Image (cartoon, rainbow, N blue to C red; front, side):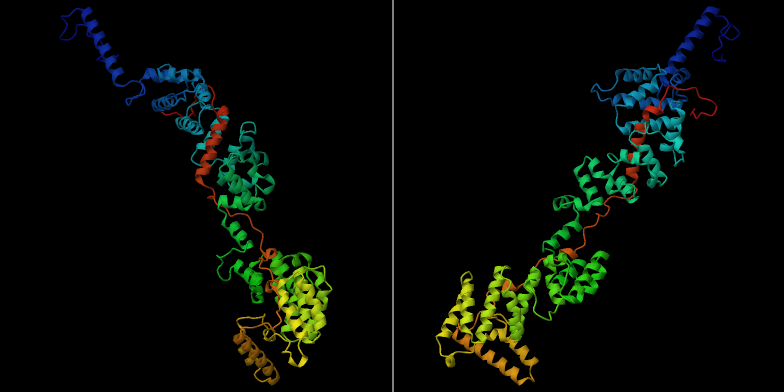
Length: 566
C-alpha cells in the first residue's frame, strides 16, 4: 500500500475525525482513483491494457501490452469483415467477440483457424503475419519454423524432412515458394509441379518452363481455366497446336507474319530480312541464295543445297517438286541440255512447255521440234498446256510450209480453245494463197523473243540491235521483223501473224511462296516478367493459406526462450 493509499489513523492534522470516518474517506478516494484509471485507459486504447487485462489475455496465449493491442485490432477486423453469408462458423465469431468483450479464452487460436478457413488468402496472410510478429505461442513447432521461412526477413534453408509433407502442402505452394527462394526450380518434384500448374501465376509457370521443369509433355494449357492463358502456353510449348485465330487472340505477331507470307500478303519485310530473301528466291533471284543460307535453320540450309544440286541434272525429290513456290528458283538454276520429259512431274511439264517456247523465240527450231514432240506424247497432262503444245507444233509446221499438218493440229485446238481460231483462219487463207504471194510465215514478235503484239517490242528491238551490231545476217532478220510490225501497226491488222502463245498465263510459274523453305514457327517468346516479386508474393500467400491447419494450435506456455513483446 502506498503512502497515498495508507489510511490516516489520527496522526495528522485531521486527528479530530473519528476512525470510521477516515476509513470511509480512504475507501471513497480509492474507488474514485479506480474509476479514473478505468476511464482513462480501457483495454485496447492508446493508454494500453491494465494488469488485469494482461493477465486475462495470457489465457489465450497473448503476452505483453503491445501484443494484446495488435491482437485486439486483428480480431476486430476479422469480426467486422465477416461475410454474413452464413458460411463462417458462428462459434468462431462468438469466441472472437467474447475475447474482445474482455474474456479471452484458450479456444481463440482454434476459432481464428476455423474462421480463416472461410476467408481469402490475404486475410490469412495478414493474420499469420501478426501472429508471427507478436511471437504468439499459437504455432506448432513445425509451424513456427515454416512461418519463419515464409514470413521471415530472408530465406531459411530447410532439410527435405523439415518441409511440409505432400499431405500438408496440398497445392504445392510451399514447395514452389521454397524452390523460387533458393533458385531450385529444376529440382521441384514432379508431384508438386503437377499440383502448382492449375493455379500458379502465369509468370511463375514461365519460370518453370525456362527452367526446363515444365515441357510440352506436361500439357500445362490443359490445366488452366483462363482461355488466354491456355492459348499462351500452347504458343510457348506447342506452337504446332496454334492456329491463326488463336495467334490473333494472343497477339502473336511472329506467327501472324509467317501466315501472311505464306498467303502471299507480306509487305513488312525490309531488305535483307528472312522473308524478303525468301520472296526474292521464289522470284528466281539466285544471287540471294548464299545470304539466305545464313538466315535459315540448318535443316532448311541443307534443303536449299539439295535444290541447287538437283539443278545440275534436273532431278529433285518429290517433296521439292511438289512445292510450287520453288519452281521459279528451280527453273532459274536449271538449264536443260536436251528435251525435257514432261511426264516426270507437273514442274517438268511446265518447264518443257517453256523450253519449247524459248527455243522458238531463239530460233533454235530443231530443239523446239524435239521438245514439242515430247509434249505431244504427254496427252494426259494439263489440257491447256497440251493445247499450247499443239499450237506450237502448228507454228513449226507453218514455218516449214507444212500447212496440212498445221491445219490438223489447229483444228484439234480450236475445238476447245477459241483463241486458236485466228490461227486456223490464217492457215486456211494461206492455203488459198499462191505460194509466191504468201507473206513471211514467222511471227515478227516471236523473232524478237516476245509474245504476240507485245507493247515493248521497240525497246527489245533496240537491245537486240546493239547486241548483234556486228552480225549483218542477224541485223537483217531483226530489221525485217521491225518493218513487219510497223506495217501491221499502221494498218492495225495483225491477222497475218500467228498467235503464240494462246494464253501467256499457261506459261507462267505459280506465284506461291516457297512453303518448304519457310522455317516452322518457333515457340512464342516469353511475355511475362522473370521472377516477378508479385508472383512470388502470390505463391507465398497460397502457401500460408494451405498450411493454416497445421500452423495454429492451442496456446502453449512460453518458456524463457519464447519471443514476447512486453
